[in-house]
Image (cartoon, rainbow, N blue to C red; front, side, top):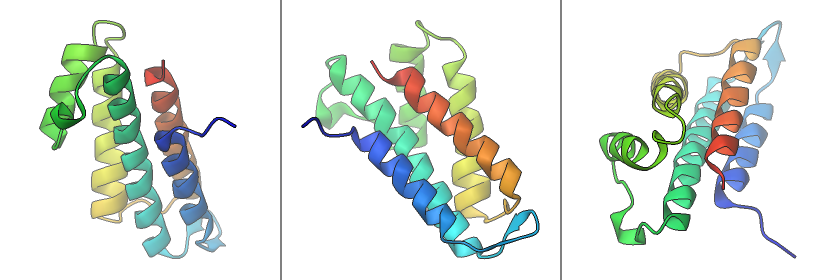
Length: 128
């Protein structure tokens, strides 16, 4: 049996965390689960990049350790194949990591669904 990639496993965990929050109207009622879900979804994005880089021959020890490192690796290894990936990564960094996880500013159900769809699309694009 083939195992799921770590990025997909993290992404599924992120959705499960988000689903733990009760919904009232069109907003999530428990920001703790929203923050945890956004943080885990962002990690899924990073894991997808790591998986891609490893498959392309980047040594485990050379994997990025900061957002700047990820930006550099995307420009170096991924942008030649898809120039939009840098912008998509920046958008996910701001939405998932900063607004969703760090600041806890996103509580709208539809907005988060769209952000999670964008994250999954990004993960799918970098899989080879």
